Image 1 (cartoon, rainbow, N blue to C red):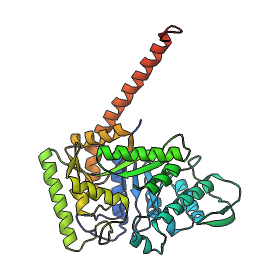
Image 2 (image 1 turned 180 degrees about the vertical axis):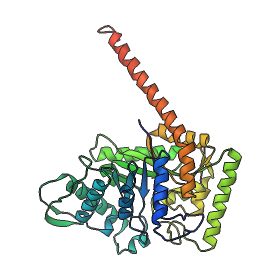
Image 3 (image 1 turned 90 degrees about the vertical axis):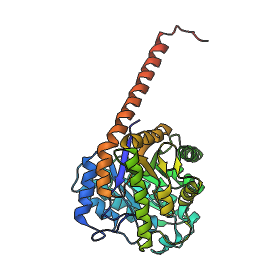
Length: 383
């Protein structure tokens, strides 16, 4: 199966290791970073969402109008707009981008962060709302006749959109989470299910949970799986580990100076995914071929925060281990957003693509051999 790479479409140059150098929306940097991804083998970039951050939808439209190939993953929280409005926004953006849009729906793992924009629902209520929201958006994208909706969270009558996506029947829907409620909602509605980087054994367990939820929802084809990491690469293993320890030191120094780390508040995280990352970090620093947890521990399990450390060859092989589990979208983001995107694109992506091509060719050859053996077998043989 083909492999895809997802990067980050940040609107400024700040990260967990250093503050931004300019405005929160730096137009020139936003374009420069996106172009670096397009020029170095990445497939798409994520326009993330934060309560006080620049609006990702116009940022995505800005990039779509200036780049020709890079695909867009737009993060969206259902609490910030009615689904009738959002569906039109997404369809318009798919038109602007000539069919390059995927929408990532965020339920919200922090009551405090959700409350900043007036969302007072409980976590379970939020999952219920997200599932209904996605169902409505999909229907709006694909329905050309007015319809009514009477649901738990949304009610409207006689609605039909006059703007439809380029992609047919609709753009893909992306979803993430590590709780049972998340598996149920995403297993039912998502085309792509997103996980944070965990040890291989735990990732395999999560993939099975997603597949089971999809089966329970009556689906015959489960969502594709995406897993996210923070790669730390260097020409030698020794240099890579030195860089990794410098990175954690910089994260801790930034926290001591009062710097924000991924917008997290104080105290233990509320969401299951972050609690899982912290539990994994507490149990050990290194897992499998290259997974390293102190970056997650330093940020309090804030989002995509487990690292893969090593040479490009080591990190590529580690990513292939996840590919062999069934992960076909690999998300990666460094701490020097621009420089790391270029380095990863130059030195890691080609290695992974080459090995995936070899695996696909070997599978194709086995399939041909199997078909030929079956054709040569006499009628009734093997009974």
